[in-house]
Image (cartoon, rainbow, N blue to C red; front, top):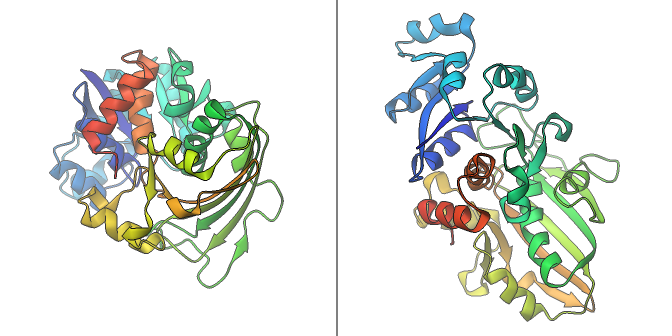
Length: 337
């Protein structure tokens, strides 16, 4: 069994911990927290061994009545691989710790691409992660864009991608984020960082991205225009996407007209935390004019990278090929709305 350490048990870390636990070939060795908050208590209630991410704060856990299994150094030393799910920038600070114990590490999309050996998306470049010491699982938006681009490139060829990203102001629990009553170009310069980030997956891709932030918390929304190398019918694209397990085509009859109803559907479907691990593409939005393809897709920023982290573990350690890993991850998590 692969022994997985998870450094950071917040929005992403707690979801990755649950996903790793569901795998037949993995175990959660432990999770590390910087402070004894409600998530630390939840980790213990779920039976995860809790470690202190900062040695000087170990007494805070004791004072809160939370038993810790040791320090993050001990956790990393004993692990086969560590998933760093800490806030943006902290992963870079943790890199030396992982190198000290020669433990391969996965980082999240908020880290710089030049921190790692390669940037990862299971659908697009699984094999490139083999034996890498430091791998970045790209951000929620880059993951969503890569999942759409990969089959289009393989089937039709892609000449140009233009994407407008309407981004949530913050996650539901991020009370300090915004805007509250505004619509912000974010950034006001073009392209946004998302295009160059996608190019870390497809280094020969021509892509422009624009970003906006809006007063919402549920999801991001993408408006895509992809110029293909051949004319194609919209029905053929729908059929292509229907074969992709991590693309969910929302049919018209479901009457899901936005992020709110999409999240409600995920909750009604029994998804933990109402997570949507797939790209949610409005089927009727898929349209073509000559070689130009258009669509709208929703990206759940809290969860779409979770299966990617699971697949990256197997990719780095050479435990499965892309098809085997994706199939196992999808089956164990119940991916495929």
